[in-house]
Length: 166
Image 1 (cartoon, rainbow, N blue to C red):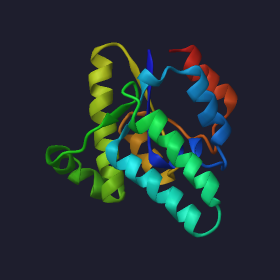
Image 2: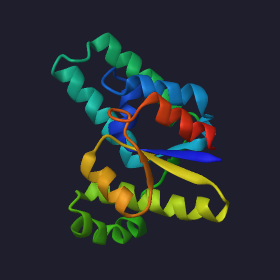
Image 3: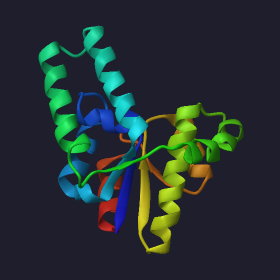
Image 4: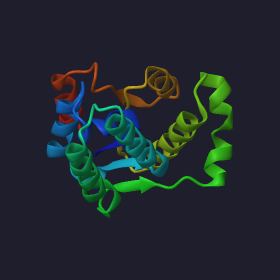
């Protein structure tokens, strides 16, 4: 079984059309939501991106309201979608990732959370694929041994291969 861990840079594409939206939408059609997760801080980042897009005119108010409704329905309020908590222990365990990979604090916390989940899933013979569009974060995840997918760069065929192998 395959799980998907979303960084906000990938999951936001579900709620605001941009490069990679088609592949994120396809994933939502083909993979049970019970096998999807993101960090709680990622949800905040998605909302921040949507607000920025609304404020600078890239997302009209009506589409912003719709995006917020869909985000609430599919991620925040759906108990099947797993939202990973972020506590002080997780934050402190992510400290070394900042200097090691030259990533920001939020990305380090997300990567540490992803690595922790991967460790748990491997014990259950399950896979984790990290979805992100942040090149530096993707590089760090690859270095740490995480399978990655970038919906802005990777292809539908690569997505189908991931799903087929699950």
